[in-house]
Length: 403
Image (cartoon, rainbow, N blue to C red; front, side, top):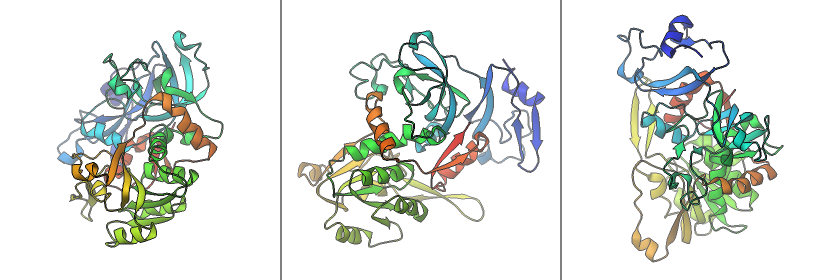
């Protein structure tokens, strides 16, 4: 085991003048690993003793890479050697709440060790697996059949939020959350499947569509890009909407029949309705932003408030009786007309990554149709930059770390 992080920094640090930061050397020993964690109080240099007098207030909070203890697999768990972990918009929620656990809830890796209690569960050391991220629950009660955060035991923990997640060299995984990866899925890019991919599948699969129907992808980021591929594999026509031309271009390359920039094209509603002969049958809303951060040439951040524009615009593109599928989670409550619902103008449904019992169908569909996330592969030391890029709306693909 190593000494404290601060002591390790004193003994094993290097100053990189070009980068303007101190990085911690990995400390030898079988009991430690590197992990990415949000630090709400340290200086931008990651070490408390460094003089902060030259650092502005905006620099005081960042993701740091720490040397921490390798966790031990408890009853019902595996210890997993992480192969890939990816950044999700939900991770920003954890950061904004100043959670200090290891970040990340999208992961894939190899079973390193197994607790004796799971040796008969159909897994073996060395198996490549993907996994969900709510641990400690019973997986059996009425609450767990809806969502594991509703477990009646009250023992559930959300990895990357209330307990350590997957931006680390190792992590623990409840065996109920795991499944062996199909041979066609590359473990080095598999992590986004186990949040974004599964969620996108559930959304499209439950949007009440039949072959040939039009579906709108509202928000062309990581989930929207996978939803585009899934919808096309199911035989639906796809129109993608976003305010970012780069992400729209990705959806277009993945088979979207049409794309619209809802900010620059003031006539997009009329054009969409003409294209779809009256509107889409379902709209899956993956956007979760009610504020977009933009950075000007002086590197100061200004906020352009959109106030749930993604959801507010959906009724205008739906045909009568269509489905609004709620996926993205904006900060502010949705404003939905009860009269529209009562008169059947449209209906509202929602989906999420859901429970492990529904995972296999989604993953096997993605494998069968060779549906892969669009990814940008990075290093663990890039994690703070990845968070910054996501917050500023600069990410066009799912950013992931390979270990």
